[in-house]
Amino acid sequence: MHPSRRTAILLSIINLALIARDTSAKNSSVDDTESKAKVIDIPPNYLQLYFVKPNLFGQGRYTFFGFDVYHARLWTEANNFLPETWEQHRFALELTYLIDAEGKVIAKRSIDEISKQRDLDKSKSQSWLNILENLFPNIKKAQTLTGVYTPNNGVKFFFERNIIGEIKDPELTKSFFGIWLSNLTSAPELRKKLFQGSF
Image 1 (cartoon, rainbow, N blue to C red):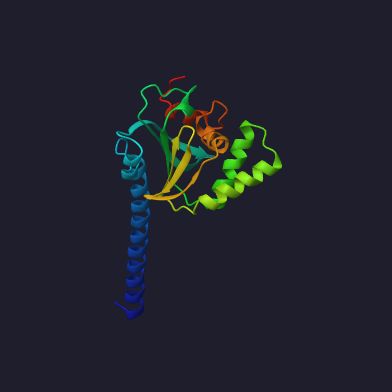
Image 2 (cartoon, rainbow, N blue to C red):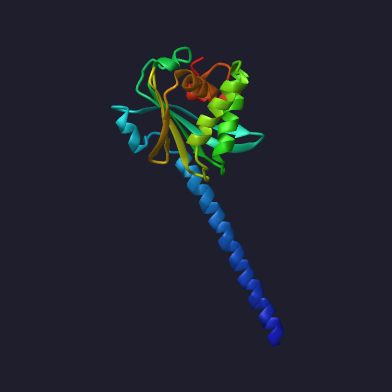
């Protein structure tokens, strides 16, 4: 076989191997993300600090314009966790992201969603935006952001296993979780799954 032809064949084999390796790595990354999102009954360890026995109440995936954004899980101990009285019970909302997301974008989107549900003047909107921007980190695919809500005592936020801050303002806290749990949510299908279709 001519040396140049042998070299061309060898390069083709190397290229195919590299493509196969990259494809395998991408598939592995997707599989890891999906498997993490599909864990259905094992609560994060840090929830033991706030719940005697955290139970998975509901879960669902949020999709935006055809793109999967995050998988949401709602944890609580309440047996009567109802759509009309959710703010009266302690719970944790856990979001496992299926894309990379910047903290400032998450904060801005949160304020936009809150504004759809209530009148928010410019001063309060900017104040709340600043609070959320200072709280939320940049998130990579498969990482988790969790808010633990306590009635009349605000919310503590965890990024992966680490606490990253809290909000004590009850108005902001209820407005924030209303993004998912209020009947005015822009994601009614996800809300239905979080509440087990109980409405």
